[in-house]
Image (cartoon, helix red, strand yellow):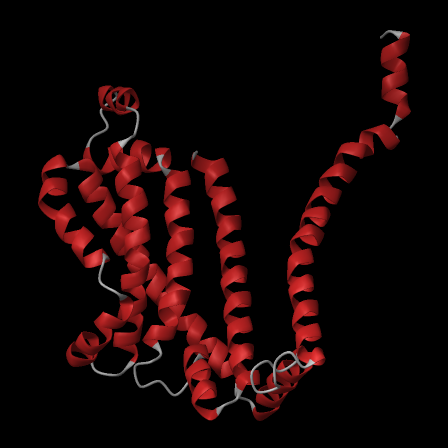
Length: 275
């Protein structure tokens, strides 16, 4: 062992060795702080507009009034049930719609014949506004949970379908031929080669579908709901409770961002695993 090597072995983990770890810890912290700047500025601007009298308390209650509304609903035991039922509806609808979108996108992305036959119809159905489905779903499924979850599932289906369909159409043909030369065909070819090749596009579609699910939630909870954030939003509007209306909007934004962050963690794991 040379003297230089001995010096390196005996030096131990000094400040230079710890620098990369410290840098990795600082980067996420700086990212969180940077991401919090705009929300903090929006809340400050909201407070200043409310305090200056630019808007009346009915039009724009201050942030403290929204916090008081949240505290009141919490103490009555109403806040968590609203959050729970909405999150449950979004989760079930998102998973159901994403599964349908994945299967449909895979089928049409892998078969040119199916693509020519089905794609025009899928494109037409995708253009139907969310509220247009409400009367039909009530007629077919009633006013229970099935109609609400189905509407959310419809919203989640098309982003996943579109991204998977387009991505599979552009998988490297040489990669597919190489897999076939090793005896992979059909379902094994799809799950082993083609789907892993489109993991980034798949998760882009899933994140869009999740955002779409939260958007469709409000329309879904127009269907004879007695609980949920969409119900709280509409009820607050009808009763002139702008503080609760803003609370429902803030909760929808926070839950939407939190669920997207969870999906982002799964995306990073899947990308490391397959992409």
